[in-house]
Length: 362
Ligand SMILES: *Cc1c(COP(=O)(O)O)cnc(C)c1O
Image (cartoon, rainbow, N blue to C red; front, side, top):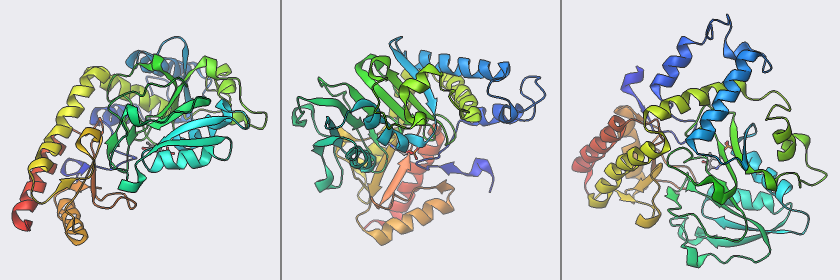
């Protein structure tokens, strides 16, 4: 199969901007006259130190990260943050509030339960995680050390369309939406995101932390999981995921050409609207999430008939649309429309859905 015949709707690892891949390919064997690949460089070399500093500066600029906050380039995926957050932010016996709005928030809450008292203050599990609670529905505990939520629920296709108001610092999993819209970082205590959705290949986790929250980790916290240690060492306590950091730098350059997070917010909304408008008028497909909780990044939909869903996935594959099958815990279909998915891919998706509807209307 040729690359130009495929649109990849994978939820992650997922599509990367083509100009980024081309640039990486052009520099793969010899990075800017160093005679070596970025993959082969010492992380202490001046060439790599420049890449590191530039990528960090670009990230700071893209999200307008205030000086109170530190940007860390870590490993372990978003999933390691599920344990790192409570280990660093809670002492034994402390309470943390968790909004359980999907699969990953659920796992995070269970993991935190090993280290602190978890107060699940909002869940939509009884309706298959099809909606995000409103501010008034959040039952916040007065003593919470932090309030945890997942901004975009990758599996169920819902997203918070507001930033919760809480007394406790906000901790947010932004894995599947980071860099898709501007964020007021100063409102957060800690933001984290695995790279493989909107930023870079899998293997890099970006953490943005208010320095005031670091330095209180428990004594048993593994060295590699101490925010303070990583801040002190500028993410280089050990070998960082060098090549991924380089790739993130290229993605941030590309994001600039799209108008940064501000430009991307408009573009991503236009792409998602195309699909949701069609879903709202379709008599075969319907969206899974409540309209006010819809995600622009992960669009979940179904026909209501599992056999027909499977047939649609087959039909879409035959037309070059890959990875539209929903996550196994959610069923149905899911189109992940991350930053790098071109508008043409979304237009093709809607065209294929329409074609399928004409021949399969029930
Ligand atoms: C993908 C994803 C994760 C898991 O990320 P890993 O890097 O595989 O650990 C966690 N949270 C969200 C919201 C995700 O989309």
